[in-house]
Length: 530
Image 1 (spheres, rainbow, N blue to C red):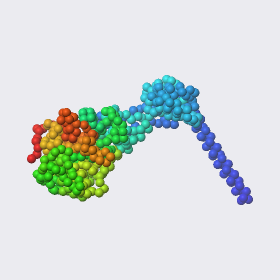
Image 2: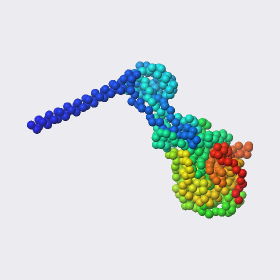
Image 3: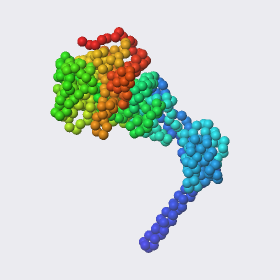
Image 4: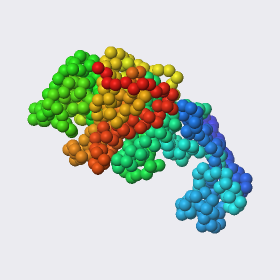
């Protein structure tokens, strides 16, 4: 009796399972017929919901930098098309998609009633043209396309999204979570400043026949990045090698040995620790020998120089001696406290890692003292230099607009910061930075001429020149950093390729253009500090 009941129960269970499977098969078939195999006029495309639009990005003055526009994606039911070649030609003509690509998509075997994507982001005109052709099996799905009304002027900073709307680089990637919430994101960028910076960089690129150029404009108190550009950038032209990709933000994503502009930190440390007096004299003329190495200067120097003139005349031999008075341990610790031994952190997640020695001895201390043997991103350098002049507080650079100062920990004393401002003004009035001076704005700054390496060896005639300009120097608000890769001097006019003749005048022109835009009043010109 029990055995018979068990057999009956098993048969009932098997029958029930069979019924469920049959019902599921019928439902699937009905879905196939009603949703996918409808006629061309009433077929339902699975992707019919419009994606959420990303937030607009605007500059600090409300100028639209990145927005969204409503477009359509085009789908086609291949088995509804009799003449594939004609359909491919018509779709290509209306959308700009290559005819062969559309043809290949349509020729692939698909399930009956299946829709395939043949074109993305078509505008109203293309949609109207396609509808007028009455291609069988065609459908349009709402979509959103990212667009940048300022063109490529800030492309490297803003980044981009791919054809599906996913962020791939720049602020589009770094601010993705916030941008997906919609609304408006206001950046620190000032497009007036951005255009002037780009204009002067492009002029210098041509004037000095340089391989590349770049620049940054930063508020030294808030950390706001008002302008940032790298040329060639696709507007100015140029090759598209890995190192000169026109969409690459090289001011953030690449690291460089910056040369003598790095002497700012050697002197800041010396002033902070009182290891050197500004009137202290050092032997310079024959170079400085350290073990088997002889550290020499690019230009002829007098036999002796006071410390202040070692900076103003940019002596490698003198700076190496000053750096050694600080020593390896103190130098490394100081550069770390300034943020130079870690990637710079901003809303863009692609900040480059610095390169510096694993073993930090006397040789490394001397060479790092004058800006070789350590590679940092320009933005990392700029953030540290801002701390030197803003009263000694560390700042976090930002691409977002800030309404107030955002200075952090005190890394050097206000007194050291004041001394460094005087020294940087002295460089411009009495030293290698004279061509950066701008009447009425009291610029302070420092030149940098770094030899580039080829096959692991420094090459004297291949230079990367830079200039760090701070203004107004008595109460700094802004910093302009510019860089030229392999500029060529015009010997006939007395212009050499060193930074004092290439990067310094470039920085001065940028300051002269943007200072009035920033609302800075002109003041009576001041001379060198005593």
